[in-house]
Length: 348
Image (tube, helix red, strand yellow):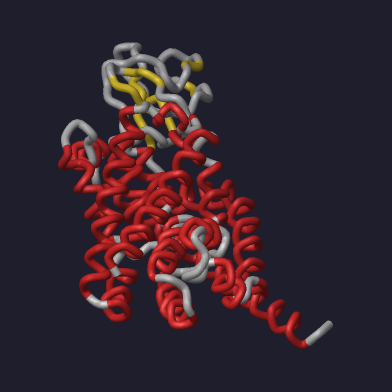
């Protein structure tokens, strides 16, 4: 094996190990934090903040995305939490687009590397396209392409409220027989996911009450369960991203996305998605590519393509959305990258 191939292989393996550890830790930590937020912040509050009934919900989602220093993959746990909380679909998708593109890390690096004018134009394009895409996908009813398993078990109506509850029968000391966990009652249901028991009652009626597990243990259990279901997708995506990162030299990108190539911008956008690069690396790399001869428009297309989406993220999103939504997501990222590239070539 030649030294060059060996070096590329070492880079790919190093990136695989780094991404594997980093994304696993990020996924577990972010998922747990989202679980804690859901525990203390009622779903109706999240729905009100990120409602799609007014424009405020879309801009609230954009601000939330701008405040979260996530890459395209670590946005997924928060996205899952917002969908489970039944937040507005349009604002939730706006968050999906803005979180990796407008987070504090990438904006700070933009300012330091390209200056204020470039940063403002980049942020404006990302914000406008993200909000518009979220609004249009909401109006086109793309919410129907969410996989049912994202929301968990089907809600069961009991005591005048809809709750998710275990369906195993439990014993009643009042009537000496078993009743279903979702039986109607005059009492109240506590935590939806709790273990259900039936308390004794002197008037011969059964009162269903929820026996909560330890709060923190329950949140961790749900976090770990979610991680196990998504880990194969995560591992496969990391492997593809690391291989691409290790074996695609920068000179090849410049060759096909240089100033003289009229297709440089769309090519750079297409290259950006499989070329999984974190925000901390994509901007310094883009500055180096610009110095080698890549046009500013192609540089911006590469940044948006690589920071806004990745094969890893697409694979993770496949566990949440049907193919129509995946196609729409990629179309928005490519369109945003190409639009930004054309604008930058025109103005700079």
